[in-house]
Length: 339
Image (spheres, one colour):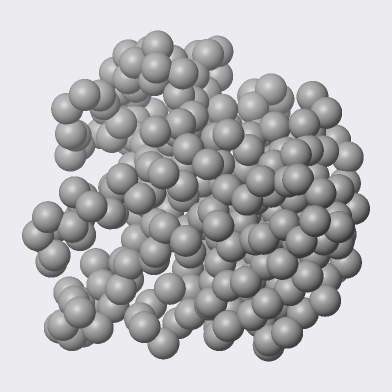
C-alpha cells in the first residue's frame, strides 16, 4: 500500500510477526527490523515508555533508569539499516520540556545520524517543543461527526508553523473514527461518530503538501482493525480507502521533498470555503497543480495556471481552454492537475 515507515508507540515490545505484550529485547527488535528492511520499511523507534507516557519500562537489557535505558537502546539499534529516527514526545505537557531536552541531547550525542522526532498537538506550544527534536511533528484530527465538514483546523496548524514558530513539520493525518476512543468512555452510540471519507483523507494530505510538510505519518494503522469491535466488518471497506490515499501520497513523494517553493496560483472564488492552488515542481522537473478546499459548503473557483490541457485526477476541475480551470467542490475536497 506504499507505506515506507512505521511508528509503533510500544516499541520496547516490538516483535514481528507475533503480537507482544511484554518487553522484547535488542536481539528480537533487531530481528523485527530485519523483516521491515527486507520489505523496504523504516522504523521510527518510540522512547515514550522510558518515562511512562504509554507503558512503563523501568528495566531493559539489564539496566535501570531512563538515561541508562536510552543509552543501551540507542547503542543497540543505531547501526540497523531500518532505523529512521527516535520518537520522544506525543502531545506532552509543557512541564515535560526539561526532560525532553535532556533526552534529545543524550540521543544526539550517542547517535548523531538519526533524527530525534517530537510532537505536540497545541499550536501555541509549537515554538516551545521545536527545540526538543531535530524533526517537528504535529497533529489535528478534525473529523468527529456529520457536523464536522471542514479542515480549517488543520490549516491553522500550518499557519502556526509557518507564521508563528517559523518551522517546518511532518504531519499526522487522521485515518480513524473517533468512536473507538469516545464510545468506551462515554457509552455513546458508535453511530454518533463517523469515519473520514477517502476525499477528506486525501485532502488532509494534499493540504500538507501545499504547506511544505516533508512527510506524513497517518494516525493510526492499528486503529483500523480496532473499529471492528464496535462496527463489525468496517475494516474490510475502510482500509482499502486508506490504502488508496497512501498510494496517491506515494506517487506524489517527489513533491513532498521538492527543492523549489510551490507557486501560489491566482483564484477567483464563489463561496465561503478557502480554496488554495499551488504549482509544484519536483527536482526531476515533473509538475503538478494541487488544489484544496477547506469546507464547509459549496465552492467554485477559477484557477489561473497559464497552460491548457492539464488533466484532473479526481474530477473536481474542468479545463476552460484558455489556461484557466474551474474547480467545484462541496465541503473538504481536493484535486491534482497533471501536466
